[in-house]
Image (cartoon, rainbow, N blue to C red):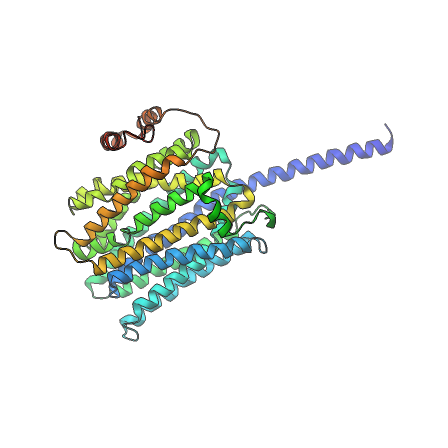
Length: 487
């Protein structure tokens, strides 16, 4: 062998070694980042648990009206997703690291301003303008936070292998959900203690300060993530108008329309469960938190199961399971305001149902969209959802403020309308959505059987009764739509 040949062979060996070394490093970096992402999500859970969970009670403490509560939810729900269009476009120019960490840092800073508003209100510096300012600031909070959303979604799509998404995100969601629950409960004790001292505004300042610190820690951990290089090609871009025009004729578009309408129907009632509990039922902050935590607990307990079903049978099957529960969640509120009753009916149905629905919806996007279009598609998906939040909450707020009835509580009527609207949307639109992954094809009956086998024993009996009751009920009203529900 000539010297030149030997040299070429040596160069090729070195190239292969270096390439394999880099790949090994990449895999190690991905693994490290996925573990770090769980820690980051736990830090972010301090923000959701002690911040976002109490924004409606905070508005009520500032004397917000029903229509203002609707605006608080609707405007933040609309403007946040709209900012994702600019966030997704910015991925053509800036790195994902810069977009994500900047957005999260600014979001953390907004909590300092929001808690400062309450202190000014307590000292009489601002009074009548406090609630409008809160609506503005919380909308701004949603805008800066959502700006980095498409970049984060794109990043996680690159880091989590397709065949392990269900398993990984169920683990991440369980841990972050547990942290959020603990923080929510601690925040409730702080608020009840300060309320007894007539200092509840300072209680909110403390819990929002905790939210701020948690999000700053989250920003730091995000800066330590591994960000694989990705070239976002402009030729893959399509406008929101183009997306809307094609949505009714393609599977992903039908999915987005379905979820958006469910969001609209849900948010017609969503902002007012807190108002109903705190004003009409007279719950303390602690009891208010306990009932919300019960829903989160059922979500966490069912999360591993949803991950298994999504990975094995596809996210369309999981979406169907969630769609059985979601319309039924508001109905127990019409029967009784008893705390124990609501925990084991309304909150059980809500926690299990929304856990399955939201988990399936998120992973369905990963399945349906190519790597280069993840950022823009999740932005458009969130805009449709944001529009649903906006319209639903505004309509609900106006209904609660201006419709006067004597035959039942106005909030209970809102809950009933929401439940009926959800059911109609599910019956009409869900059958139009198709599975996009190559998965094991089994009947709904077999999925149900395997689901019940995998349920943890303490919850098996309760879930079995609830499931079969709902199945028999939906069969009667859906005989003409064979195969839609479990058969």
